[in-house]
Image (cartoon, rainbow, N blue to C red; front, side, top):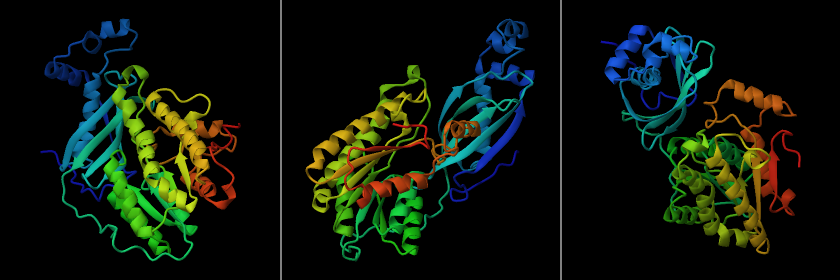
Length: 407
């Protein structure tokens, strides 16, 4: 019997990468053809494959994808794996006899459901991606989560007079956590909203409190009106006031050509980028009006100039958020509420760590300042827009692109 690893949920960390190498032989392909019933001549007939423009027989795409099953069932997490979902994009053919490398990188964890999100790739001998995709896997162990500071609505935090309070949605993401950390260090009391990552929210709150700041964490699915109402109610009971809202929550991003996009995938992004922001702002309005507060929504460089290909669903949702933000800035100006946005370029965060390193290098080469932006860069821009230095700014979008956008 082959031995497999038995990693627990808390042993697996975001950024962990697992790999294996494999050379598929003609016998492997023949046996897979008999099991699957796929006897396409491209896989079985060398002469046909050569006449079709290939150097020889091509390995079945699904046989290549079986390496992901080996990685997950034997390595990450191994014995305790329950494979939930896998999407695949076949980008390049692999020939029989060609050595390939299969990789699985941990890019997300959900303590509530004990699941991990993996960026999966198979690279050919030239280090080109032959198969790519995302996998979701349940880890069947029973590790206990660390204590999470759940808010007590009946026990408000004793805040000093004049201390300002901000609610940050999506605060456990790379950008959201950087914003929360900087604002807390600048004297803001911070409401840390999270959707799934309770463990990370607890660590962020603990970090802020250990540094002398005030913070608490609260879970909510921002797509649900009742959950948003509860989020604001608890925030106000804890802080007694609200001076700022930062909408940084985002759904998962996948690259898909338009011909493969269903309307449900557009709605997935619209739910986070428009519906959630609408519901949070609507509930926050009377409290922001009382304090003369401000809203900062996180956009993206995709709303400037030519957007990237194969992201029509995400791009459309960000444009919707841009329009909504401008409309809100006009409508709420007479109420003394400012609404501005920040549009970062490509950042290195958990959401982008699955990208090939060449993507980051190419982006640096196109950037006049010759580096990638960081979540801390975004946090400093948000802090400026929330502060007195931006008191006469509303309806403004800051393109945080290192000089790629100059308007």
